[in-house]
Amino acid sequence: MSRGNRRQGREFALKVLYGLPEGVRETVPFLEDFWKEFRFREDELGEPLEESGAPISHDVRQFTEALAEGVLENLERIDSVIREASLNWSLERMAKVDLSILRLATYELLWMPQTPSSVVINEAIEIGKRFGTGESASFLNGILDRIAKSRKEAGT
Image (cartoon, helix red, strand yellow):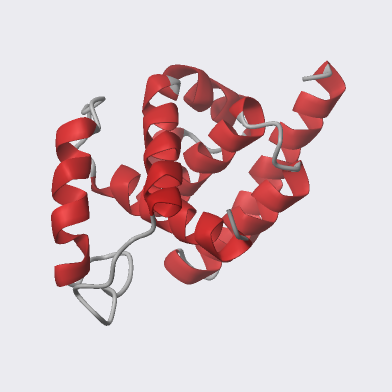
């Protein structure tokens, strides 16, 4: 899968996680609606595709779903790791978009070791620049760098 497709998959997974109602841990019904509706309306996380009928590649869709489902299946562990790495920040205080990006990137760092940590962190920063605030990039970088270093020190 090309780098652009993986970025697109990450951005779609961010939108899925951001859009899930609090407490929902099942993606299947939500994903069905997401794939039908996401490109037909403006949303809080960016513009719809210019062409409403533009097909999404199978690889992008599969990667998006794997990320979103992986995050939800491992949410307690992911949130625990983020809590340990986020000095002076509770999850409740974090902007929802930043927390969603952190969850995606932490999932990749812990469960997708084939992707280098530097790539995961860079992708999270770039997505944070696009969808977050002016402070998102440095906030994400600091926490994800601590997670990657602790993972490396633990030998995982």
